[in-house]
Amino acid sequence: MIRHAIRTGRWMRRAHRSGARLGIIVGLSLVSLLGAAKAESLPEALAKAYQHNPQLNAERARQRATDENVPQALAGYRPQIIASLSAGLQAVRNLLPDNTIQSATLKPWTIGVTVTQTLFNGFKTANSVRVAELQVQSGREALRNVGQGVLLDAVSSYTNVLANQSLVEAQRSNVAFLRETLSIAQKRLNAGDVTPTDTAQAEARLNRGLADLNAAEVNLAVSQAIYAQVIGNPPAQLRPAETVDRYLPRSRDDALAMATKENPAVQAASFDVDIASTTIRVAESSLLPSVTLQGSASHGSQSDPTLGTLRNDQASVVGQVTAPIYDGGTAASQTRQTKELASQSRLILDQVRDQTRTATTGAWVANEGAKIAVAASESEVRAAAIALQGVQKEAQGGQRTTVDVLNAQQDLILAKARLIGAQRDRVIASYTLLGAVGRLDVKTLNLNTPDYLPEVHYQQVRDAWHGLRTPSGP
Image (cartoon, rainbow, N blue to C red):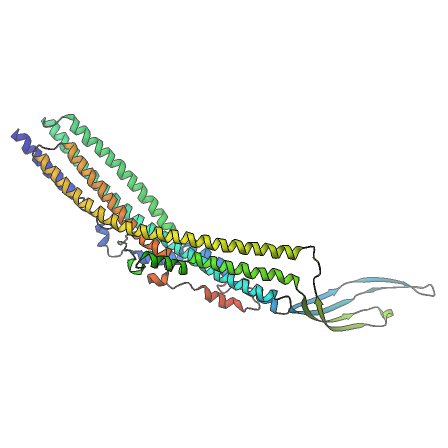
């Protein structure tokens, strides 16, 4: 009995040293990563995603295309100039009074230019310009919304890689502990100190640990692929991620008020209401008269001597007033249609506001809950570590069995996994709340990257009268 206790004590001391290798995982990254000379931080990853993410760059291209609606609408104020040229061959055969036949091949040609200026079109041009400008404003908010989504995806992919790296390391340490436990159990079985049941239990836990390690490695590989997709390069060494609590509102009411005013989805829906309302006036312009002024000049040449003239020059200035009387009901139908679309846009705005308030409330609650979850998980890890040490000491005195130690070890591993997940969720929740209130952007986060300013392209093309080349080059 004394020899059994001595061997049990030696085994438990060795198992205790193996279990101590796991440590208490605090943070989302490995300790080895903290000492790395060149490690990428979360703000650096966000800056890369902001610059190179294809989804965000595609949305920027869409916005630049939307900017072109304004010069297209402004074209209604400008004159339309059309040049024309006609030339050809004409065979002529004339029967004269003396019954003689005269024939010739003529080469007539005419060149002309026509200038048309709209003076009044029922305010259609003015309202069309207003619609185009509102579309630009709505598009900018949509771009801002996509930018927030991309940055939040970048945060999620970054913290997922960190969490999965920590889980893989924890599972590797667990497998090492279980291998040593199985080796010790086999030696004790050979010495006759334990039954085959202890060995089988240790072997079963080792296989479970190997399966858990494999699952953790698979999840890490998947998260690394998503990271490369969102950020633009594969992850290497990552630094611990921090929350953005310093940028968050102080209360739920402040968060709701801020989200109602600054959330890009709400702002875009508000501009859409203005677009729909102004589109009604564009449709109504078809029911009003229009005034145009047209000037033209032409020069023609004839080679038929029988016409008495060899050249014809013309110039004219014509004013025209047209008033619609009945078009079959098309304009009236289009006006009614735009009014219904305006009603729809107002209902959509109410819906978006409700969704934003719900999302903000959920983000606030999730962020507060994540704080509690982290604190609870940290306490659970400390308690589980103390429990494992106690079970090991009790096993040394013969009061605990091998399976008790394995269970305590498993409880500690699960507690650490929950802590890793809680810390990851804590970071994501803070960024989610920042996005819900509409402030997840380069300026607020003070990222080391130039901010994309859509108004720059807008000013470059707004008053462009001609040119096929885009400001970016192609």
